[in-house]
Image (cartoon, rainbow over all chains, first blue to last red):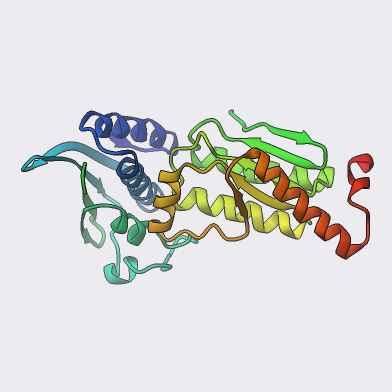
Length: 128
Length: 135
């Protein structure tokens, strides 16, 4: 799903919500997942002028989960460990986006290359 | 363009957010609210977010800003009706929502606003009972 403008964010969240309900994710986990996704989409829009999000349902034993892959072709992140710290920002925000999103999901992976772009993958399990 | 309506209730302003906010809408709400406070001399803002299922750091910052700026304009802000899942998520996100008071529902929010503004009234002189008449 392409994210190019901020108006794309709400339809994206709705789509994500549908998927989360489909795999019977609890309300709290749904809220955490959608909030984390919202942070990451916002980063994509602010720093990379948009990008693409892939929504997938994944399975681990009996548990289902949702995997989201956020891919952009923006400037990349210079200092990843700094970007993952609470309160660090280059964009005038609160600096909670990346670290906050990481706390809200079960699995968080980020790969970035300067000048090429950033890819963030998160997984939230329905029961975890 | 969509806008969130701001209702006037005596010396307070009431905002009920019924839709999921995108950024522009939230920023407009912030500036509309601040302008309305300064125009009307309202001394309390009640923001009902019971229909909001997601509050991310951007939304949280807007709410915090509304609280901080209104405070400078002598108005208190109370956020009411936060869904439990939203509260849990905010804590984990690390968002403290500084500058605003919270209450469980609109009734309690209004009570809280009344107590805050009448306390201010006692400290600063004017009789709070006259506020409604002034408007």
